[in-house]
Image (cartoon, rainbow, N blue to C red; front, side, top):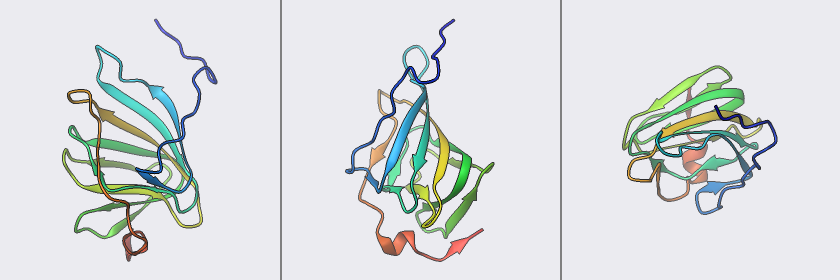
Length: 135
């Protein structure tokens, strides 16, 4: 048995190369061998978001607080609320983050494939972020 006590592992602030705005990562499950599953609690301040990206084994997001947005190529931007769960298929190009005026926290669950959990692309433009929304 291994217990990680609250506050034992520091928060991380990811590179602006992959995120717009203020974002914080708090580790939940590290993805160390023999399990390739990695879980992060990710908090996005209002307006903050990921760059476009894909995951080799897909990704599940569970919204734990706030209001978020998620976009997938060719689809309307979706509004996400606390309690919602989203699945992105392997290779699905997408982004996610907070709404313009409300922070959002989600659990991000992904599996490492050959040591990699994501392939990062260009930043999400304001035009993409502010596109019409579906609920």
